[in-house]
Image 1 (tube, helix red, strand yellow):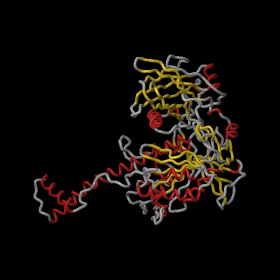
Image 2 (cartoon, helix red, strand yellow):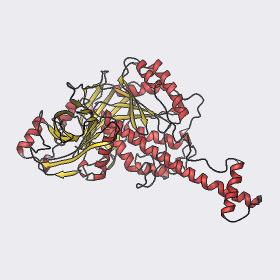
Image 3 (cartoon, helix red, strand yellow):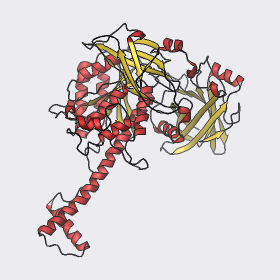
Image 4 (cartoon, helix red, strand yellow):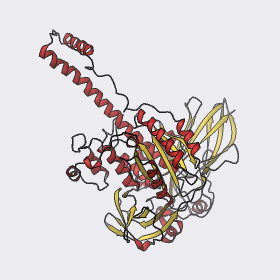
Length: 593
């Protein structure tokens, strides 16, 4: 990625300014927050110091409570009461969701045209769930869909896989379509099903051969007896330990892949406004897994969890983890009451801090917890608490789970308040109360405050790398594009394109001389998946007065060209607004003749 001075028009790339009046998010006032509500304007983002908190309020019967006002709520951030700047009661309705259809073959876009306020996403975890459990859970899901889903349910079905997220079926209210899609899903073996290698000592013949080889290498005679038994134990121990270490590394890597898949889901559903319920069907993994950051097979680190929670919150996704192992007939429940309360308290408590939680759960392997399944369930609880969802385990009530998730997405309150910037990124704890008796509330337990402008370069590169390699379009930044003229260039062709960001989306930092900062990445791959062209450019400048007026009125365009040989290509476009930390991506097929 290179940085170059800004120019209005150049032979290869230029900014042309497109579309409607634009007020930077940092300058939005309370009245703007009040008007936006659960509509297309509000986003769960703290880059502008405006914090949005979706809150579900139910009575003792579990029914949603209507008619509340801002005066009925109290919001605390890190223990300090905050002034509520806006409140909207959001009632979800079911609408069809579809991508905007290009009007011509040379056009492409990532935007959603019809947007619902209610959406339930069912994610089948094929990374951490054993093969047998996956098959059984699929059968349970089919049974559930056939009996419990009606036309008022709008559902998206996805699979978390080792190579990224697969959209099994986009939004639909037709249960038969979903059932057919589930039945066609293929499952793969995971580290829960296989071991790294076959350990020595699992049969007598292997034992004998191992002892004879060891004796030969050590120039000693194998005579059996107690010394042979000791040697046998030593021979057995080494490969078993090596296998266990490698298996642990594989599980840790799968935990990291799971978080990256959740990040991709957040980016994909970002463009659909409203609170979205994500049912994560999995057997889970331990929150405590992880190795050195430099390791090629590293597990989850605090930074990975922070990044995941931030993206889920920004996309307004609440996670409902469900232990599919607990949903199977005859399954042995893992009782969370088996947690050792003293160990929990001494390790930092349940305050939502990722580092403290990680330290606490590292005690699982040391026996600090009585229940061997506690770590997986604690992970599920942590994800649910920090996103405003609810964990489900020790239960076979699949219908109850879905109805709860659907109800939460259908009716909720969106609170808004302005937070102060301390200049330091980090976790900020949220506490929401309702000044009424006999009510229950559910909201996220906090958020990660971060300053996108001061993010380290590796974080930006990680965002762009994920967007480039994902099969999903990232919708936080709406994009549209078109292919232009084709010029001969020897045996190759120079294919021009135009990529557009609509007005109101590009962030302009008015406090720092109308500063803008965008990364543009374009990668073309041929039919074999080989990279045929690769563009990377950072366009950063301070806009003059006339440039600012054009951005506010018309938006932002980026024009460039790819040099390609004749053939069929898939072209991936990625744009990152470095001042907001938001991503947009879209793919297009291209035939060069």
